[in-house]
Image 1 (tube, rainbow, N blue to C red):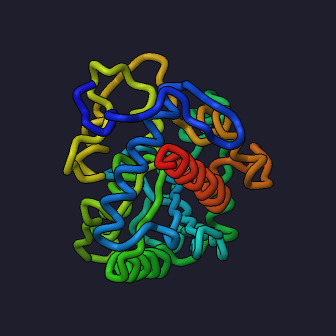
Image 2 (image 1 turned 45 degrees about the vertical axis):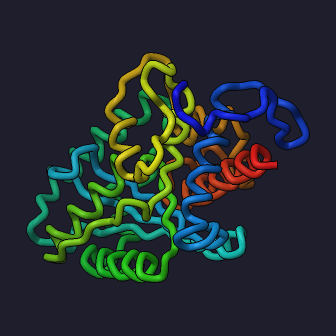
Length: 277
């Protein structure tokens, strides 16, 4: 690799009481360590941050809807509050309910065929959901406050998925243009994906590359055998559900995924600190 971040990096990394030589783990340590150094110059190490997750009726931001949003506040590296809100789209007269139900059923089949759990059914949205406009307004203000305060957001596949849905919904349903700044989101999913890529893909962050640009570059790469889902690859690598004290059957609930993502981010931090030491 030509990336200078490799210079002087030891062959073995001592982490969590064991030595590992896994290239993927090394890459996570290096890229996280480097970004933390850049954050230190801008806003301090991210001991305080917000984890965010959404669940949707499909995979196309221009056609599908956000069905639930979860977030968790982390202060001094400890998660203190966790929230999970469903959006009741039956309250929005312009949304065709039959199509929404069909989209949800199709998405459920797609997820379950891959062994993933599905919780945000149409019945769940109607029975437990809140006004979509009020929920989106709340999160628009939350994100703006976090960004204005220099608080980092943590998402899994955030730049390629969550951000596109959120920005699109803010425009469509609130009439507000909102853009997440280039370095406002640490994307645990992209880091996990990049850590497994062949060196020919240039998988490490380039010097001066923003999180957004790095994520955009890596998300466009298709490589056989590379997996980074929270409930499969990340669970197998780090044992996240045990760390979080939750059942794998609760995966793909927004609040659960936020809690699991928090533990994944803290694993990345520990790797970076081990590499630095």
